[in-house]
Image (cartoon, rainbow, N blue to C red; front, top):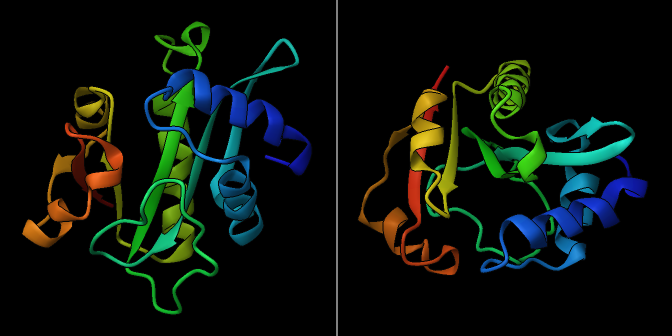
Length: 157
């Protein structure tokens, strides 16, 4: 992902997650803080999906539509902030391929797990990628900005 990709990335985010909007500045900040965790999927010269991830601390995840300001000094999880695919990019294994790239980046970073908040009925997708429902009451209580059906999940690597 590059800065030039951010308008398309933001548009995809609005289309895929209309009930969970995030300001374009959130995408720009994640790219600035951890470009190795920001990926785009392209087809015929057009961005059809993206993944945004970064090292983080286990515990309540960052609230949606909130700037991080900086990454933690001692991360213990590789946090998948978002993975979004347009309809035409789904069903061909592209989501799984993006997850594999994130797992590889987590390994290179020296982290032993990935974590995320599944939204919009995506728990079954994330289960197919090796993630399981996890988290204690404090983590679950911190999911309010993600909607009523949000689910914290983790995958060991």
